[in-house]
Image (cartoon, rainbow, N blue to C red):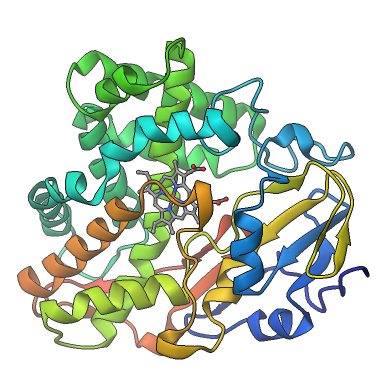
Length: 378
Ligand code: HEM
């Protein structure tokens, strides 16, 4: 057993790059299947850069999500950790039977069949929001890509549509670094959850009926917050990359859209890293020794862009017990916007050359286009 090679570049560095520039992926991949780097919150982090090892680690029950196992030296706030599993019920911090029970409550609500039933309505939301855009050049990253996924998830959960603005503001506040703004955002999410539960119909009410006995309203609010925020932060970024591609490719048929969605997600995964996992015991991964409480991440972006047959591996939505519960909804949303764009706005085009588009890589926060100026009516 040995220690992991040190990452030759900072995997969390913030950088602005041309949209399709590969960044540091090849350098990190070449360094080894598991590399060590400096964690944003200090101390070492182990990063998996190879698909088979990633799938093995994501199914390994010695790697747990509960932040109670984070390095003792980490400042919880600076590290952006969620509350521990004991403090707060959450899909993203529980493991084992408690996690399975909570997943069972969620999965039927977001199954492929179930979300397909909302396809028409999701298409209408895309149409309404695109039609409302200004006729001149409009930056779709400024508002549209944030509003659309929030309008969809609010409608599905039963949050009244006059509260979508509140959801947008709360998501933006949460992405900042001010603790007071963070607290205000969490209070706003609670209000949104309460409004959805009071509305009497929608998935929020269904989820309340399905969660394990004893889950109280405060806990339910947090689960609903998880669905709202996870919808926005990921789909928002994915829409930018997808729409840039759709517009750059000129007139495309609706049959090309599925391929563009899959390929866009693979090449620009909106969650470039998994969420944190921690070793609950010392262990070995691919010949590398990890101590107890070691923080571990899977580098989805590096793995997804590895050369391979048929476009290479795809870990965009994760793998194992924590595989994204919203994967079907997200793909449906992306397809819906692309379809509306090509059918209702056949003259739409980029307002700047594709080569001028830039993305901002923000480490664990993911990559997002800095702007997407578009002339929707040509
Ligand atoms: C393109 C859009 C999306 C991407 C790329 C994405 C990606 C991911 C990934 C990689 C994970 C696993 C994280 C890990 O194992 O640490 C995950 C989990 C999760 N996602 Fe998504 N997601 C997307 C959209 C959504 C949507 C629309 C929802 C809600 C409706 C959602 C809700 C969740 C939840 C609740 C989890 C935690 C599941 C668990 O831990 O059991 N996601 N997502």
